[in-house]
Image (cartoon, rainbow, N blue to C red; front, side):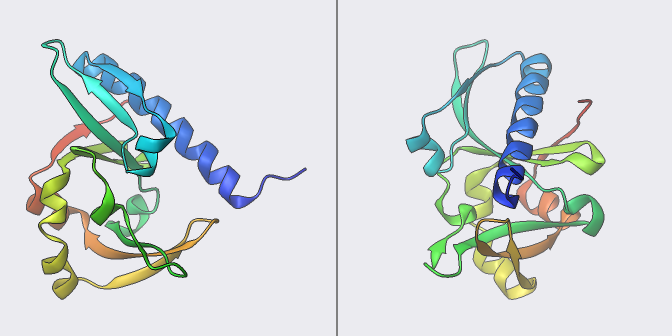
Length: 160
């Protein structure tokens, strides 16, 4: 039986999540805990706990196309049928990890910095549709450099 596109994308996402878990455990020395499905639905994928005991919630996003296009897709509408807002609006995670597998780059951004810029970006950058194999979504297409500068993201060269 052939896997449908959603199952393939899900498996790919899980692979990237595991790679990022391993990388950040080694790089930052943090303890990484997977979260419940309830928290995942709120946009939290992991809880990082540092050596000092400080904890923060993290959402992982892998943007495979960014390596080809030079742009991030910042999801503002997750399902064009229901009108549900995308992760840029709804995630409750404190940090967003944006990973570009094709360039082995990873960016860590405080989520509130993204939320505070959405309306400005909607006036500047185009909105496009995408299909992840499960549903259609809409996102703001932002040049990677502009996004990184606006959000003052930490950049990591990922050796996975």
